[in-house]
Length: 144
Image 1 (cartoon, rainbow, N blue to C red):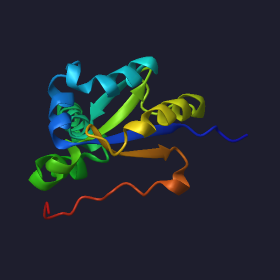
Image 2: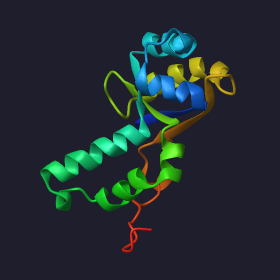
Image 3: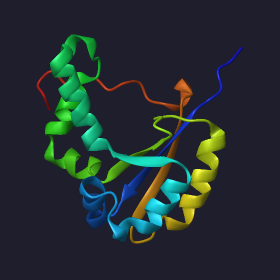
């Protein structure tokens, strides 16, 4: 018996809207996006903020139990990567980071018209099939 794949959508927001989405997600300037997300019980989570949360949790609970700690810490501390990941947002549906195709498909379809517009620059779709996902990154020992 194989487990059914789950999906995740991520958005890259244009720079001014990424800042607004991180700090004021209910701002009226985001209404076209917010309305779609609301209809699908979806929320945005900035990837850089999620990485920083992971680092704080690992440091509070013992980094030896967090296999991606070193890579994530390097990413959070790298200004170039911060610039990239503060514009990247994971979509949570019903509080879930990955969700059924029956939730991902209609959300993706409704978001597509916003892609390439003034708020949403890009959209990406990922699934839980290990063959479609890279192996976890390894941190470089020198911190680079």
